[in-house]
Image (cartoon, rainbow, N blue to C red; front, side, top):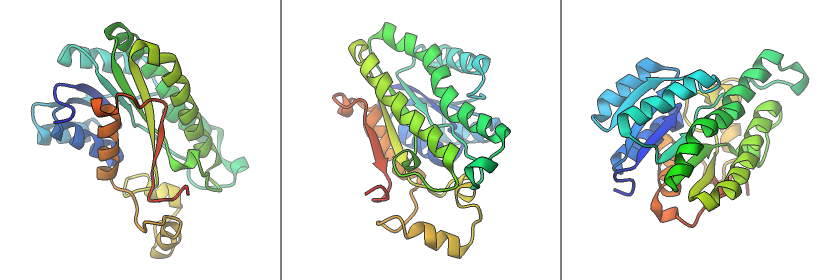
Length: 248
């Protein structure tokens, strides 16, 4: 029960890594708002997890949606102790000059602007409380970029730099900010990272991960639980690779 009585928001919490984080947080005693574009999926997960989980629909790249999400959490919980900026997207692998402007704008809006928007609405609440933990879900792409994913790589590099800047600014206010850098895992985005999902492409991808497997939502839930718990009270500004050795 490492998150007992904590009140958390997990964006993109209906599936993939976000779902793994939600499940771990609830199992460890937290009350969690599952915020996702996929309201049906979020509601199904909340129904499965019981009274400590609540669902809401949000587009994390839209200011009004983030404001509404914040108010929903406050109405339900009375406070926000933990924020997990997990919602993310990518573009299909292609030469950097061939990525459309529409795809570029979408990737930067979901992966970067969302962190700015949640900070606008939730950081003031944490500052006033004198405590809080923020976790940004970045990527190994921020550390060891893959070819043909240039603008996705850049968006996640932005996220890790933002994490460190946020951490040093918010530390005097009692707010910790960390990130995790997952390697690709069995999530809805896997096919987009690989371009195509075939045994040959999977084998090539796995050959870059020393531990020899894709990451799982459970892996991310375990790492997120530690970084957002009081056990990590001296840890801020860390971008933790959860990658099976991919970035070594």
